Length: 155
Image 1 (cartoon, rainbow, N blue to C red):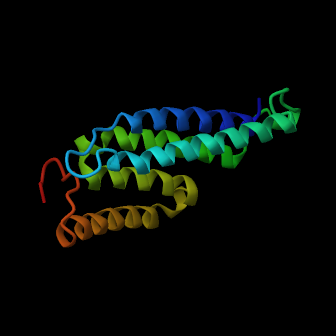
Image 2 (tube, rainbow, N blue to C red; image 1 turned 90 degrees about the vertical axis):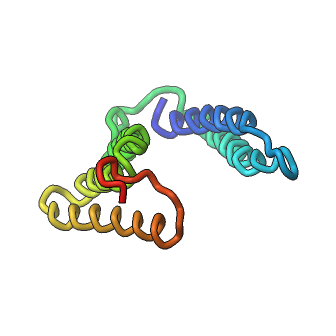
């Protein structure tokens, strides 16, 4: 199975799981009870449909028959995607405890270091810190949208 076939299977499985979980969301007490469910359920169903389309195309191309010698390792793009997925999971796990600013600095900084390289460490650090602080100030102070605060400053 190559990367295209694996993507098709994962898209289908995640779409089905997302649809089931979105259908189990709490119902609204005012108005239409299903109103909070429609949008996420639609996203899950669309993802499952796209997974089926990808799966069909992969089967037609014969992506499940085996891998050629040239496809045995991940390309740079594949490694970057895998790294981004791994870092995103870590970001989600530390988001509440570390707060928006610290977790976003770590997430954005790690992605920038992979993309730009270690030679650009000053630029990567400045962008990660200024973006995280800037977005936190805009959302929490100007727009009034509550984000997890810094665990030790509560600003």
